[in-house]
Length: 137
Picture 1 (cartoon, helix red, strand yellow):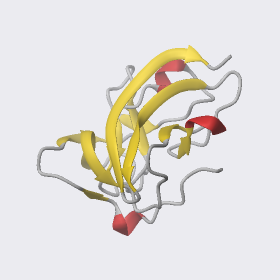
Picture 2 (cartoon, rainbow, N blue to C red):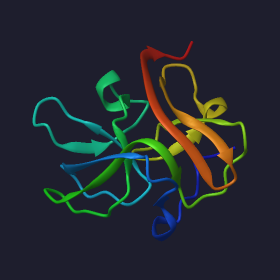
Picture 3 (cartoon, helix red, strand yellow):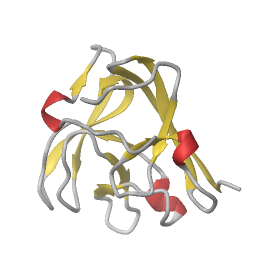
């Protein structure tokens, strides 16, 4: 498998109970990208599993497009349509590629494991980020 091919214009909340947050981005982001909160400035940046544990600690998925120093919403938890075709029952994680999302099986040794959620339908991810803080063996 490979990173999800996300159609940004199709990213959307799938239920009214989803928890969202207005944030300030430290770099340009697109809808559907996984983001983390950088402790040094409190702004949000694209996650990646092959960097530091902080960079892999996903805070949510961008549901707005924004430039550096721009504001937008992220979904922190709940059902989200990522604008990609998902495999039902598959666990999805922060990818080594900045902002990208991949199946767990695509992670390699030394990647930090951050589970984003499980696909409950071909167009729905039950998002509940869990950063393990450890690298895959």
